[in-house]
Length: 517
Image 1: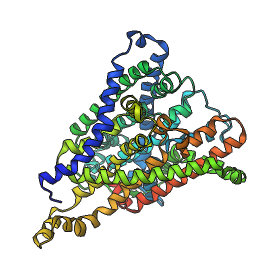
Image 2: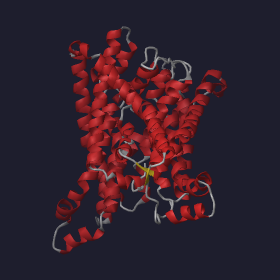
Image 3: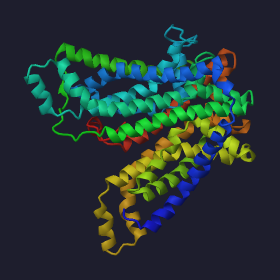
Image 4: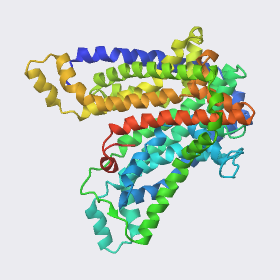
């Protein structure tokens, strides 16, 4: 769509002002608070361990995701089997699951009363397993896309020259997948390092991350100086990783596709065993937590009648209205951002700013900058929109890039005004992508936990905070209620996933790497 410079500036004004007030200004205030730290803070062994563990668990998740994800991705890329398209689609499901659902699912498997009978609480493995639930599909999707870039002629030449399948993998296939994997590994580290919900639920006292420590210092000790210093250190690490990610994205350009090798039917027993192992890996890390939540929820259905009380009605009402308002506002801001950005790379990059700063740092910065608004619902909704609208901006921007410019030009040449050209030509083509972006925004809002826990008041109770409260109360009835509510939250996220997939490209296109994970 062709817009004048003035029109683009007018459209860019609302999202840029929003980012300035809700992201850049709170971030600057947070940096100011962190500048008042005492040098002795860095010598505290307890805080040193928190920072060190935050880095170690992010790095360990990257290594484990590579170890399990690359073999699974190779099988999905090289072999065709019944259910392959479904497996590729289901890789998107963990992305829309609320953090709390994943954490409850891990506890249902490996908690003190877990279905597996293996109690991993108070060990680092519980958090690492939870990290893999979200991040293993990211590695698999990226590696499938990378392996799909290998030209069939190059791989055939390597095999004809006597290279074994293993040697051909290291010399031909692995270099093709590496440019897709390295940036995604940076994202995985960033997600794990800045994660809050999983670390709060699964880390325990010893293996909680620096984000949990920031929340503890603010919510329970009112120690804003030390919390600001830790937030500053966290931002420095996250900013460095984000810079490495941007450098890798620019440096490791994805090679052009040339005669990609299509997946072949898995006929030999070894090929079928490899496919079975790949599906087992995906089921183990990305499927079992959700199945455990479903099983526990179904087992607790007897207490469903007792669950319907005033507290639940308030949580459902708040979750519904917060989500509806977030979808509405993020849709407007995201569409304005996408239409204004066009080929302005700096403006397109600004949409990703909320992804770089963790939700805990966002909430803490808002509390510091706007203390007079801390008890107002407006600040909570603004934080929701800040975290959700980049999904809309990205989806709409990608769709606009894919539209031929001649469509709008043809409409204008036939006498249509800019508004009529947008309404009759651009808008119908934009709707599927916008629907996907709004579904992501809805999933983000309904499952948001960190910001809600930081900024919420008792009358703003949501499903996520109610589940967290139930988990913290003694008694089997509260545990069953937490499982039932988690099942409900998983159902809502699954509905968002269905909406996303209904407008997505066909799985064959996804397998060919038309959409980066």
